[in-house]
Structure formats: structure tokens, C-alpha cells
Image 1: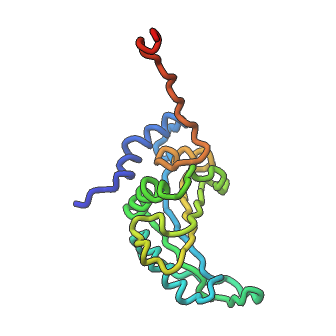
Image 2 (image 1 turned 135 degrees about the vertical axis):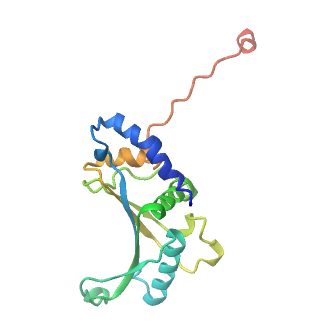
Image 3 (image 1 turned 180 degrees about the horizontal axis):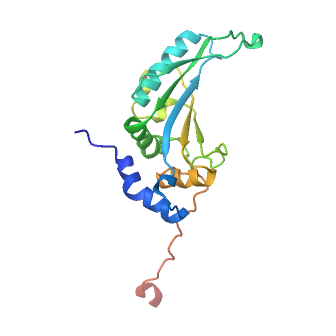
Length: 200
């Protein structure tokens, strides 16, 4: 039997009781959870869309562990030389085990690798309990071999939750370890002088 992801175990054993206590949920079904994670990228502005799309799909598959689906344009836009139903990007929808494995790698490994990282924005909620995180390129994921990157791929990661408000969704993501930039810093304990320092 395959061992379940550590983040899923943590959600069941620690996060659920913490959220229940914080928000006073009476019913366990009220406690929010992440229902799916959608990773989406667009390459329509690239000079060689076909090559860029294949690279994007390959990188998303490496990062997520799941084969991406091709996304197409909904309407034609002549100024951008875009035809209706033209392949313009790729997306992956993760649920269950793969979702928690991806979340664990994103939160614990990938985000801390961002240069001068000071946390993610707390203002990217949509009002319905969902959160979208923009990632500049794929190199923050350790699965990606830096010397083999042919093109930088930026993408959005959307966390779809069952929370009914932004505050509840933020509590959920914070408990799971999402490093929001407005998270209060731990107070620094005052320095206690030793007796030798005091005597001198």
C-alpha cells in the first residue's frame, strides 16, 4: 500500500482540528478543504507557438506528474493574429494524491527557492475562497534540470477550495504552510545579559 502524502496526513491530523477551533465549525463538513489545483500556462504570444506549446506541456508534466491538456482560444482576435480554437496553452487539473504531493513540493521546496522571496501576496483571492498564485518560471522546481531549460514558462496555480469566504480560504492555506507575506513575524526574545556582562 502506497504511503499517503505528508501534507494530506497533516491536514487530517492537525489542520482540521485547528480550523474547527479557530472558526467554531459545528459540522465537520463545514471545514474547508482544497478540492483541486489547476496549473495553467499560455504561450500564444510566442513566435513559435507549436514549439513553445510542446515545451510547456513537457515542463508541466514534469512538475505535476500528470499529462497536461491543451487549451484553445475561445474567439478570434485579429490584432493578435489569433484564430478561434487555436491551441494557445496547456493546463493540468490535480486532485487527490497528486494534488497533495504537488502542494507539498510547491510550499516546502519550490517557493523558498525564489530569489529574495518574502512570501506570496495575500490579495490574490477571488472572493469565493479560491486563490491564484503566479509563478514566473519553472526553474524553482527541483524536478526541472536548469541546464536543459529551452524556454522560460510562466504559469498560474489556482487553489480551488470549498471555503465560502476569502478569510476561511486563507486560514486553510496558512495552516497548510502557505507563506503569505503579511504573516506576523515571531517576536524576538529580548537578550538576557549574563552575570559576567552585568558585573563588567
